[in-house]
Length: 312
Ligand SMILES: [Zn+2]
Image (tube, rainbow, N blue to C red; front, side, top):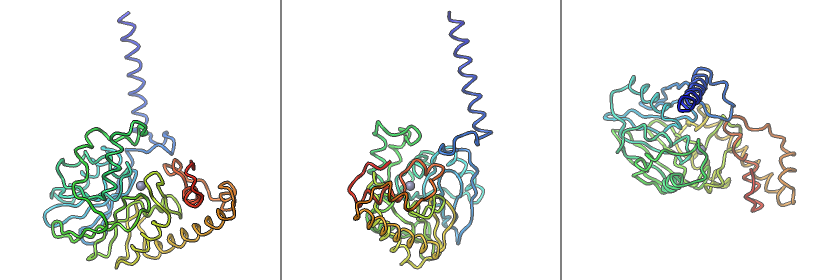
């Protein structure tokens, strides 16, 4: 009897191990909506000591100062964050002295525990509230669930509208304009480098329109206000949360596209068109990858104008 159980357990273990090896070496077997923790990272220099890290699930960044490194956003998976730290170690032996979070989505915060415990963490106060809620949410999807260790990595320095600071010789301005992608968005502005890390306020990988998390009180009008605020800064290079770097002109095009789309949805909602009719009029291609799990800009904006929040 015991022998049979052991054999059964052994076969289950062997099957799981084989599946894991297949996923590690052939990640393309994963359906496109499942993130791949082993995706390659590319660390790319921007200006001064500023870099952006492309790959993983979301883009991240770091700035090498005179005594330490400022990290912008953590990765989704610990293995990706460890990979990023290994890449960083090739550039400098300085320690990570600060972490700044652009917002609370799990692909930007969940691997904070891969960083040294006790590192100051800067974020908007609503981002801290979202992170606390995620720790205790029994309904959160397994892939979005933070580890219990996250309770030791909650933001320690809170931003409301604006926080100017100098870290290791780097002058930074953290700005929150309005609820946009979430109600805890913070952009990182480096005036000396004319550079902005924008987090998921900019997601060119997903398409021409913004992503709004209505469940985190994001808002299309706030997104427009935020991007106008961003464009009012003396900056000409913008690091997106997902996808390629953006120029001023590209950000302006995104702003115009969102304004136009929002105005059209507003007038169609006022004419009592259904969401299906609105979507049929636009005939957008479906979102791909992780983005396919989330409502589109049309879904969330229509819900804003009609007071319905039952979009997918
Ligand atoms: Zn996000």
